[in-house]
Length: 505
Image (cartoon, rainbow, N blue to C red; front, side, top):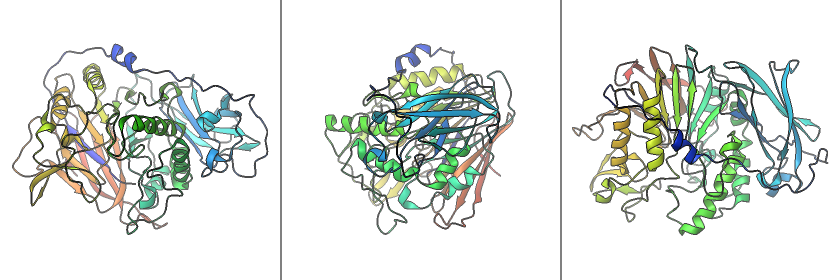
């Protein structure tokens, strides 16, 4: 698991607050269950572990949380080894790990049209407390998961601890970072994209193998089987069971470097079918509210959360609504991404990374935020990152560097007087990064505001937020395969509230 970014900008300049309710309603889609395939089974013959993919929770709110599992005794087989009928699944949530104090229980139907996945939105919980949950089906009981609710919106929780992670390419090493996060004291895991990789790693770099080759075989069944490989990993399962997750996507959950309704390897109509199936498989394997389930090739991923009065958090979608790439004849790097060099169309002010509606929603809700901190989580690096080549200075076409006008609009939104203490978080670039974000870039050197860049180790970022400061520890290991891998803090940066820019400590 790689690609951790930590960026920071604080500002105190001016704008009025605009309510974003209309924009949010425009994006909202309600989950519609697929038609049932008949009466639900409560008993059937199964010779394998029906909860082979573990359990998970997500979207912790002050009075609710989403619980997830998927019934799949044979997750690499078509259909997951399940009968083609709906199946009844019981769920329980309790105050204690032994379930002597069960608070709520119920039954939900796992439908074959949703790969027998289950998404239970449990409401009526107490704010700011820990719970335990489990599922029961086919006479089997799942592993016990632990979750927690967010603090009361009017409370001051004093502290927030977050594990920031992304880019968990199965073939590039063991999930040692997930192993450490699972045993760490964090409030939730923030995962910012590339939950799976549809590509196969270079054989010279590959440390383990996908069970199936998804490349050029982009079907719903193959996406499901691909998730089966990833989600059988015991360290990933442990991390999901230990903490609730907040999650957004990047490109590899669908196709590398896709933008909006296009991919460079397929015609538009064919790609929209692929996107619909990839989005469905993503929903089937992540703890996302059923209210945000995709409808065909469309989904509402961007949303906002609060952690009491300490922090507001935005999860953005940088893929679904972005403008087409400029200069499509640009060369590719050794790692597959296209490089831009003297590309005038990239400067077109109409180009957007988020789409107009999401941009306006973000600006409006930032202005309305009253948290001590504002955390913007999205899937890639916002700070400029160019590099010199024999042809001149280049940049990747897939990130914010290819959307300078959109980045300027983002910077303008967070430079308003009512929007202080903003921290931008991202992934995608396979390295730890700490950087300044400026309204006007300095061009004295290629990247003067990149304060820390390391890509030779694997890990995650641990954020510790209080009302006075935000600290980021880059946790890393040089040995992503060894079972006895030990993590250390590669570097630490602190942002003091009311002061612009990270400071190394």
